[in-house]
Each structure stands twice: as structure tokens, then as C-alpha cells.
Image (cartoon, rainbow, N blue to C red; front, top):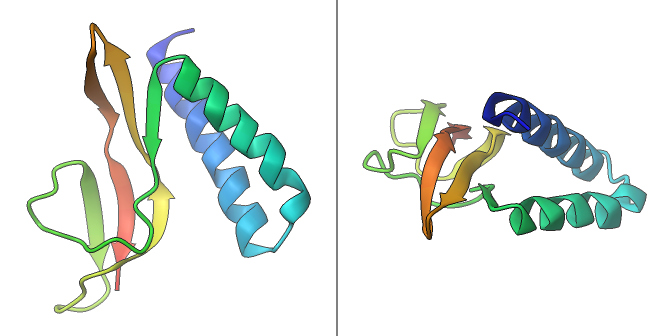
Length: 100
């Protein structure tokens, strides 16, 4: 499958997972975790940096700051996606986050 298609697919799966968590719809969680596991087996690494400290030096995310002194990632709009190639991971997509 083409890289662009895989990125779009991963973003849609993440969006379903995020919405199911926000709406406390737990019955999908096991199935979505299984899909993420299979993606990992295919060589993808998906990072969701929710509640992590934001650092300007982190080049793997693009951040929207809610305030000047914002320091914690409060929402992840798109996850960070890496792909393993020849024993190293390369960045396919920067995460898009909101920092509060």
C-alpha cells in the first residue's frame, strides 16, 4: 500500500479512537488497539503525545499554543507517524497538537 494511503488510513483510525475515548465508547477500544498492533507489526510507529510536556525543540510536532506559557500537550489532532526502513525509523508525518 502506498505511503500516502497508509498515512491517511492511520489518521482515520486514530480519529475513531480519539472520538471513542472522548465519548466513553469503550467497546471499540480492544479492536482499535488490535489495529494499532498490526500497524506496528507492519513497521509503523504511531506516537500520541497527549499530556506530554511540549518543547519547542521537538521537530516531530507542529503545535498551536493556547497561551504564551503553555507547556503541556492537551489535544492531539494528528499522531506522529514513523516507518521502519532498514532498522531505522523515518518520520512520515509530524504530529499536530494543541498545547495548553
